[in-house]
Length: 255
Image (tube, rainbow, N blue to C red; front, side, top):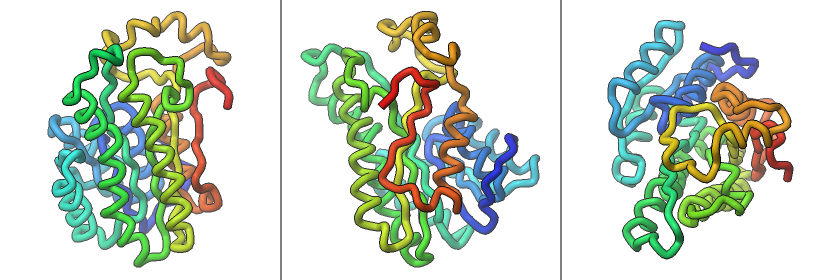
């Protein structure tokens, strides 16, 4: 597991979509800092259990829970089981999403609803269920994983995805304002071009070589670099950062 400068001893983190890629890296980062980590996935139980084993073999504490986070009932159950096992839910990272490349006029009503139900609504469900527990402890960290396309509108044929990514940051700002008095922060992390396992058929308009040439650092980002941003926002040191978006994109786009 990666080294972590942040210390999360005594804290419990829930990381949705943490069976692989960015979510896995985030779960490992919190575990490396001493947090109890709830590893979540929906379809791939083997991947979730693999991350749990990885954390445990490194001496950490992890609990794998399968849940479809587009279902409020399943998110409610996820948080309930987390609190039953560890006594708290201090850090919540919403990291789920699908990316469909569809011309706007070809987006059906079902397509629109399914993308919002997968990319935006789960963050609401997670926050709705963890915040009461954070209020009890007068401490909490909420991190929503968005994306640069929610801020840079020139990505074509992804109206539903762009809407969700922008909406996630709007939700983070609303939570930061309302629950700051309870000691709860809420922020957004917006990854740029990150080296992950993905379906490149959905990126026909963004050839990898072209993207690399556009990034000042000349490379794709690492999942560990997204995890490091989340670890900072989840730490004591990140306690005065709230309602903000951290762009991790190698200078590709500057806001």
